[in-house]
Length: 185
Ligand code: SF4
Ligand code: SF4
Image (cartoon, rainbow, N blue to C red):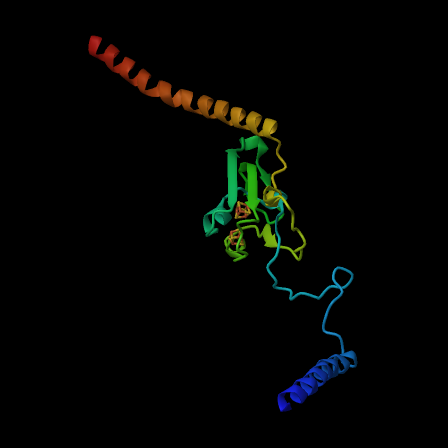
């Protein structure tokens, strides 16, 4: 019998405890944010979406080597002397960066890639709302060079290299020919 009345008291008391908590929070300042209409101001050193300013990238691949999870992929082609440009920091751009991809699905936001960059052109941005249903959409392509243009640049560099190598290749032959001629004398 005692247990019966205790259960009735319990059923009556516990909602009151819950409601007391609810009523208390009604008069306290709100701690929730109505995202996306409201946003928290994130700390200035927050690590989020990476960005590369390709106008200042010299294609040195130091960021690629520093990345512990290999999520940066860079390909370059040697620039001809007349195509060498300069970054805003005064560094010579002697390579065309024909591929600069970052797979943000693999990125662990360690920030190690930004540290060795000589021109400070790779950096974390305040953007963090880049979720997508397809993980391949998280591979960001930063190069401004199209695949066709990249192939043309590679061909141009190959031809220039051949032209540069030709006189060197001819030089030992002349030496041998001269030696043979001298022996004949
Ligand atoms: S933040 Fe870290 S994991 Fe992400 S690309 Fe840079 S080095 Fe790689
Ligand atoms: S370290 Fe900087 S300059 Fe070098 S390839 Fe990476 S982003 Fe470009």
